[in-house]
Length: 351
Ligand code: GTP
Image (cartoon, rainbow, N blue to C red; front, side, top):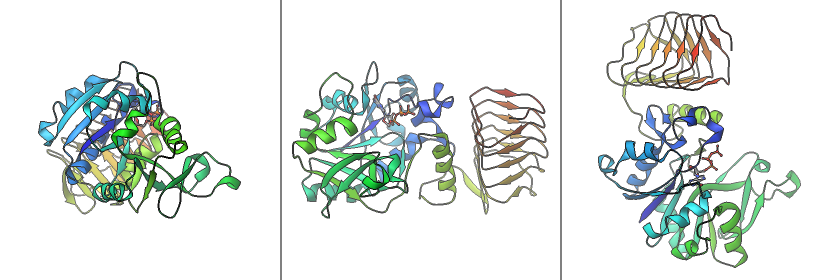
């Protein structure tokens, strides 16, 4: 079976990081996000993958090439301007054959793809949509199913009185070729708002797959950070790059820190990280390749990307810092701050 991954969106909610790096290539614990999806596909025997690219398309080709290094074959289908989720799938129709697994390129999940495929076949579905449960159903488009899993209704952001379920579209689908033919060609079109309601109206068999699996859409800063914390807390079982060097610390190659490293939470470092002995870490902290941290700095629940230098006496809490930034000594950066690549924060600044 082939898989198609939608990776052409502009990732506006993750700006400024996505101004330079497309969302699916942003690292999570020092590994481009898309590699977690490729790992998942390979675990379920899928090695033939179509990438639907549009925004910053070269960066995907530059990194993944033909896919050989990952033991997969990648075919790129390019949209000159983004055609939406449906338009992108329709545009790649010539590269597909038979039943296709389709993934949004920003979903971190350990869904059992093999069981999902078996479900789709058993139900003889035209489209199967993986569902996930949410706490606040009023913030999402809900999908209501009957006890056999057959989809009966799509409810767009209902009020609490209208809420009848808490299952939402997880952005993971199985499509039969017939469903592809119902997408109009060459226009901007959404599978969520266009294709699925239209197929339902025409009585095509649409099924929702509900199972306990981890799911996180990494599309906002909060969720991107949460995905790091969830992996570190083993809420999803995926391989973390680097080696475990202390109970709660994993590190890549050539990392330097002293035996007295204070880490109350979990720390993951990339290659060539240098941490002064007097630094204190708490919560979930991820440091990219080549990051340096100066004396007496205190960092909690933060993600710092490649090549960033943090000076002495700095305080960082719940911050996301892009690549090649400089945070000069004694700066204090408060929760929720996001620094784009190459930002410099001067000494004693308070953000
Ligand atoms: P925001 O701008 O922050 O909403 O992010 P986004 O552009 O990624 O949009 P969204 O989160 O809704 O997209 C879900 C998935 O579909 C992501 O993996 C996107 O890359 C992908 N996607 C969205 N629109 C398109 C499109 O027009 N073409 C292609 N090829 N992929 C798309």
